[in-house]
Structures are given as C-alpha cells and as structure tokens.
Length: 505
Image 1: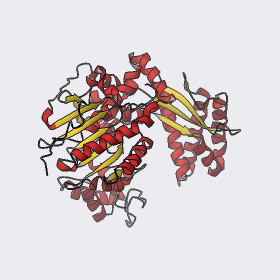
Image 2 (image 1 turned 90 degrees about the vertical axis):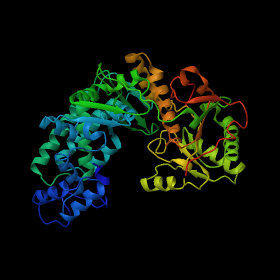
Image 3 (image 1 turned 180 degrees about the horizontal axis):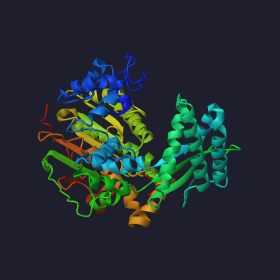
Image 4 (image 1 turned 45 degrees about the vertical axis):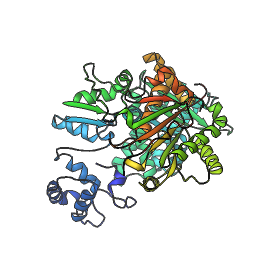
C-alpha cells in the first residue's frame, strides 16, 4: 500500500474514488476490479495502477479494498499504528489474528511521536478566516481570540507549558461542532484549505484528550518584533509507548526488526514492548575483516570547533581517496557543515569528483544522486547524517567502498530538544542519553551500514570525532566491528575491494 500521492501515475490529477473518465460509481466497478486484482499474486503499485485503469477505479482506493482479501500487506507504519489506522481497524473489526512485522523498527520511536502529536499554525487560521463561509467566521474568530490571549504573556520565542490550553480547546470544540453542522447543511463541503484546517482541529482536540506526562504543550512565536506576532501550538508526544504497545499486543505476534535496536531498554521504554518480549540478537553475516573501522580522535566536530575541523577533515578525505580511489559517502551533521567541507575539498583537490545532497531533494533527484555511484565511478558523495542517504540505500560492491562520518549524530541543541531531555530525565532518569546520545549513535551505525552489503564487500569507515574514543560511545557500536584508532597516515593504504554537549551536535 502506497501513500495517496504515490498511488497515482499522475499524482497531480485529482481523484475522488474513481477514474475521471468513469461515468459510474466505484462500487459498480468494484466486483470486476476485485476479481481481476485477486488473480495477481503480487499486487505492487504498477499492477494496481494497471487493474485500476482497466476497470476505471482509483488505484489508491483499490489498494485499500484489496487489503481485506490478501494474505500479506506491505505498508507504511501509519496504516497500523496511527490513531485512525485502517489496517488496525480492520483487524479489530474482523477479529483477525494478524502477525505484524515492523521493519527498520528503530524509526518507530520518532514516527510514533509524530503520529500521536498535533500542531496548529496561526497563519493558517488567519488565511482560512478570510475565505470561510459567514456561518463559520465567528467560531474561527473565537479560536483566534483565545489563541492571542494564550500567547500574549509569552516574551520568548519558545516556551513549554505544564497543561494543555483549556479555554482554547473549548473554542476548538465549539468550532468543530459548528463546522460539522455546516457540512450537514452543505453537502458540497468546504474548500480544501478550510477542510485541512478542520482536520487539524480534530487531531488537536483528539490528542488533547490524551494529554498526560508523556506530552509537552509548547508555543513557538515568530516575528516577535511585530505588534501582533503569530505562533504555532504543539501538543508534542514524547513517549509513544502508551499507543504503540497496545497495538503490538493486539496482534497474534509482533516482530520489530532492525540492525540498530540497541540499547534494548531505550526501545522497550519508548515503544512499550511487553515485559515478556523476547529479544534476539542475530550475529552479523559479515566479519570484522570486511570492514576496517577507524576512530579519528584528533578532530573535534563540536559546533565550536567546526571551523578548525575543516582543513583536517579535507586532508583526511583526500589522503584516503588518494590511497584507495573509489566511491565514498561523507556524512555531516548539517548542510552548512557539508558545504564548507565540500567547498574546501574542491578548492584544495579539484581532481576529486564530488556529489552533493541538496535540501529538499525529490525522489527523482535522490535516485539520480545514487545513480552516480557505479562500479566504475570514483568520487565522494557529501550527505547529511540521518537524511535520505543515511539508511535504506543499497550500494554493493565497488559502488561504495567507504564512509567518512564527521559527526556523533547528536540532535540539534535547541529549546525543544532541551525540553525533551528534561522530560526524559523525569520519566526515565536518562535525559541526555534518551534525547541525544542513543538516537545519534543509531544514525551513525545506520550510515556505516551502507558500506558492507554482501559477504564479498570490503570497505572502510572513518569515525571522525574525539568522542568516538570514549568507552560509553564504543560500547554502543556493533560488536562485530574491529575498531582501530588512527596511528599512521597510511592505515588503510593496502585496502582492496574485491566485489563488481558540549554546545552542539
């Protein structure tokens, strides 16, 4: 099952449950479409589109209907774990005995936080107020008045609060009721902007009902110099265990699969796994001889040391590339840091081919970036750790022979993360580890995992930061790694490839 936009061959063309050329109802066409789809063993996106086109139905809704009839469904987390998840709802309604496999389950912590949070933006409220039907303007204005009263005393750009905003929630409840009444009388519905804001209000109200110590309520103000600054409100889930855990228990069996589910107590606490959960640590299919891991502790990548780190990192990359030409990925904590190192490398060593990740790369651009890593190319790809190229990509053999990881992967030091740290400390007694250290090292291990993809691969990973040499960091790294410390300029000269808070983050 794909996201709605990815289900269509031409996603910019709207669909309302049936093809635009269909003169009749989706459900008139459904029996024949279902029969045709049921004869196909693997219903991937291409097959669904083909059947949908033949029977004049929408591929997105066809995939939803076929979920009732197939043996295995492959879908995004939200189809089972979201508040209104379709697959979970079907399983409960029909009393199915389902088995759930969550792949790359380390991502379920952050995805869970996102699914069980809600936010509202005052700029959006202002926009929909201007175009809203007359019958709804007073209700929207009431929300705006309560919103202004709520954030008026706040002088800082960001502030977290102990309680959810009761008066604002009352105004939201009244507005949602008014919109519901309006829809009953006007079946043609709302314009898209107001409809989306209505859904945001419903989500905000729903999350507010669940608000407890596992949530933060915060206000982020912008344009403070304005007479009437605007703000964003967020009910921010910080511990999704209370919602994920019951869905895991509701299944006949649940398997969380990942190469980076460590340390166990961190994921058990945040995902709500049952006390009798069995943990299986499968030995790596790779051996230490395949991957040479080097800690470069003479360089600090802390925010205050960034400028001083540029030249040593550039020379380290250039030296390794000279000794063993091939394809490498260089991971950094931000686009700014990435750009600084890439610019200096291009200036000092113009013969080295560079490829750079850019902000907001679409799927086509990401694929084009990866396509440059061929069995015969030689170059260095500069990317952001934790981004699109930090996991989930497969570049076996000579397509990738090494990685430079110039960051510990720590989350940005900002007011939101500091509030998260305080809450993690209050609940689990490990604020820094749960907010910064464990998620950061997990990203590092995922990035390093791009290098060795088969038993024939040989490669190198350079961990660039003095903190990697600390025992508490090294014990979080994979046990099968043979970790060395930088001792000689030509540490990896003989490597061959046989296969075709320190104030910052």
